[in-house]
Image (tube, rainbow, N blue to C red):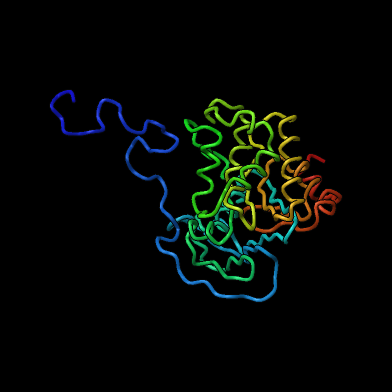
Length: 279
């Protein structure tokens, strides 16, 4: 080793993938829950609901104000609204990434408000963030294998299901994921979340930054996933297209529920069209 150092990782050995390791050596996020709390059984209600959530990040001001979003089994629910409306914040609140100061989160008959994001994954939440959602230096197949980190059973069947859903991923399974197009990367991210065999899939702006053709293809795949019975909760900037495939829609404005209804109802609503869909 050069320089007589006893550091076994010098000279560039070790992990250089900045999508995995933070080169500054410190974390950039503080978890809302350092430790998970207890859960309790609840009766009735939607399959997943963030119920009258009020909260924000750390000690900052409230971003959400009595905000409610929910999805039933086998449905697609979308959250739309103007920039800065709190759409992604509402999604992150449901996933446990910020403090819910009042209100609750319930999944499949259980109050999970006090659980950490990691423990929510174990309970059945599959979450796909908008950015930094793949390991770029790993192959497509390795990314999918990473998605199954909580599994102790045979994952090959789930892998085949993901490849059936996204044939391009099977074709490129030995390629580094960082070499893929934006739309293909999103397929990797969704596929990786599906590898946990989640009870509900949460997507934060899955079509951000992709072309209209790729957006249509991603929406087609999302519909296919929902047809397997998996409920999908999605934040989407392309409001009109999202509401066209939605069973339920939530329009947020400044962290509050402005309009709620079926996708068709919201598309037909004059005020929603005028204010949020360009007429």
